[in-house]
Length: 434
Image 1 (cartoon, one colour):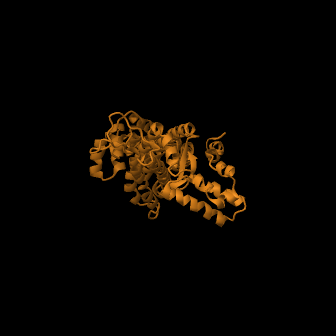
Image 2 (image 1 turned 90 degrees about the vertical axis):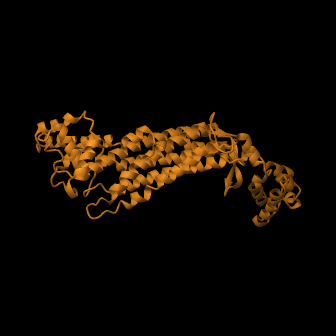
Image 3 (image 1 turned 90 degrees about the horizontal axis):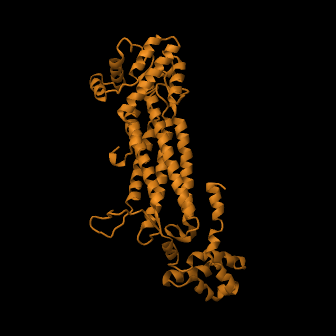
């Protein structure tokens, strides 16, 4: 992933140095288990640990791989250069390359998941704080981009909180599903290695043994993992789109924080553009781009092929690094977001009283007017407000058909904003708990 959209902790998980360190730990723990079982001499297992403080030379491994055309063999050759050829002769005994590659990949994915879980928890804290802050801040709700009925800014943040809370649960489930390892040898039969070796290695690495692994860990697990990343990315875009809409000049109910010295346009000095949330929309597309290839990786030939390998070398780092960056960016946007309550009220009153049309409709039906007639009575007055920007309540009071069914007091009562916020506390209790 390019540095512009990367954060160091997530990048470190995918560095060659980290990868080779995990490979080494897999091999060393496997030697320990085989020594415990009496399969190899204890002194050979202990000799492997002489390399525990070694910084493996990535350039040297690449040099060996240029000859061997095999990355795991290149690493094992380099390991023997540190441990000694005689001492290292039992390393990788009974194992196949996928035992190392797949187990390592899942270690990396679980570590990435831990960062993403922490990211989500941070975002949830920001969303909850803003929801509580603006629980009673009235704004117009919109459907199809058109004024509908009043809601609150707090409910908007609470809705996003609930969505991201579901994503946190999905991410935890995805982590649990991907946290498996396999040290089962060629075609996964354990013919040349004891299953207890796998159990020991997995225990040391914080994984659980894969129940049945052919020669690779089943890729439906990875498909589910990357699908979860894609859902989270879509939720990020959902929030970003709302903020972008709110920042439009004609709306301006909320906006990204604009820092001192920031410039919005190279041509127009007045511009304040929603660049961060537009960026998040683009990043979400890139994370979702990993989902289909991950699903296509599920179908492999017989016990294995390597059609999945090149895909995962790209989507593993790129999707997790991008999502980590996006979650952190969104948290910052939410945390510092500017809210304009006065504009919310002004927007709602652009067509005075119009958003109360359903209350009047229901009142007319309760007063004995048929729904069809009531709808026609309300709509004809609403259309006058659309066309002439008149006051909806005044139009209703001037309509003899309406006043024949409803008194002036009954009509006046239907324009109380508090009617629309009376259950906000109930909704908040459902989202955040009592």
